[in-house]
Image (cartoon, rainbow, N blue to C red; front, top):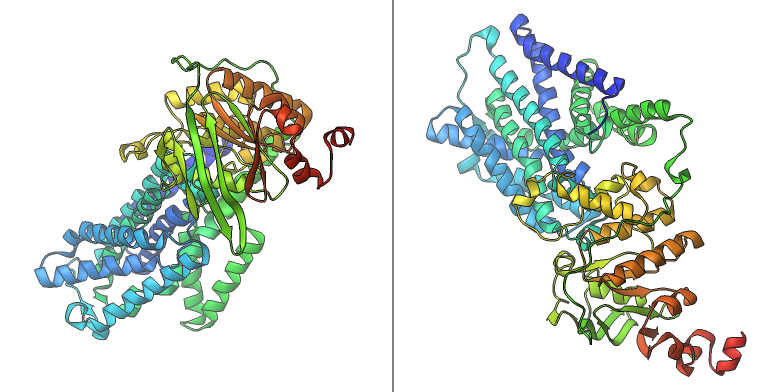
Length: 602
């Protein structure tokens, strides 16, 4: 649990006071103008909170958030006018329609990333606007649709809408808060940090993204239904307004992306600014210039947003003079012994992993060319070769980061080259990377509990850092000597420390085969000794390793057998002693014409 600092207590007290005032305001003031301003502030806060789930947590930037406002508004308008029922009863239906459409859209558009995703979301918004404009028999077309008028007293006319939208703001806060503290939220943030790595540690990224997109739309659709009834008139340009999407993005950037309260703060600030620009400049194009300048200023001077910047300032004041994480000493005491596998290792170990005829082309270059080798259970197999020989590409084909152009990969006799990375991880295939790929914005402990050994929908609601997984993660961190850094941000660690944390992260999968890509690269000799010690301990417990490494003494010390690659092909295999004297290996590393004695002398 986080310690309740004075700053956190003060912030909590401020939130309670603000919420109490918002609840009480319509009871002592019937000012229609300010109730209207606050209503739109609530609307933008709900939209920003929804956008924060898919874009702040998952990292997929959408500019079509107002599409779900329009879907909710038209759902409410069409059902209320045709079924002759109160629009209030249609709000849950509007929320369900928005979530369903988002999920269906997500199945298609979540295959894209970056600029392509942004463009598709804009196109989706404009397509819905065109459909509403041209399907006049259903939507009323350009003439719009008029909803039933309310019969509330004049002084209370806006109050029901005010309280319902305030309730949606509260639900949005609770939803984003809950998501962040579950496996679902951890998975979304892992996708934002490194989607390929998230898949490699067992996170079913397509399901997480589609559900995240649906969650980002559900309350926005409900808000759209309330908004339509509040206006009592809807038309395509008003309900599918791309400016609202821009305001939503700006609100999150201003308040603080991937935070719970940042989108709420940003929504209020944007509405107050919008109202002031309308008062002073009217509905002119100058408003767009002002908001464009504000967005540029936020990106340049407040890239993290108001709340994260303020939090970092308070933390900096409190920790001034305290040594940084990377300066702390590494715990080099013997780690905790992990439980060995109960089964006896067979006298002649079976083949656990096999690559057969793997081919990977990049244009005219064959990075991997008819590569075949196998890994026996309980061995430490070395995969070596000159730079550019295809070692890391071979790893990418084995763990699913890349799709082979030809060939097969078999794991325990089962063909896995057609499986996505997360399913390979669930089977027991773990992998570290040459350049460590931790989730840098997560803590070390969150990184270690993030891997998933299986997938189920019920699992999404489980606590992000809770239960027996925390105990297991603490054991693994103690095993690699990193337990004292459990609550530090992974991005603040040194490169060697990150290597050790990544090993602990992979061990969380309880893998049968661990692929280590240059584990000794870029770290100091003391950490190399620590790493070698841990590899030996794990191998003695029955773990199987495949190691890509350029440190030849380390390979000779650890690996048997050794497979040698050159220009994407396997050119030799055998013990380290045999490999060192193979003429083909000498030619690949040193050039043609070298003898064994000359190579040893060199």
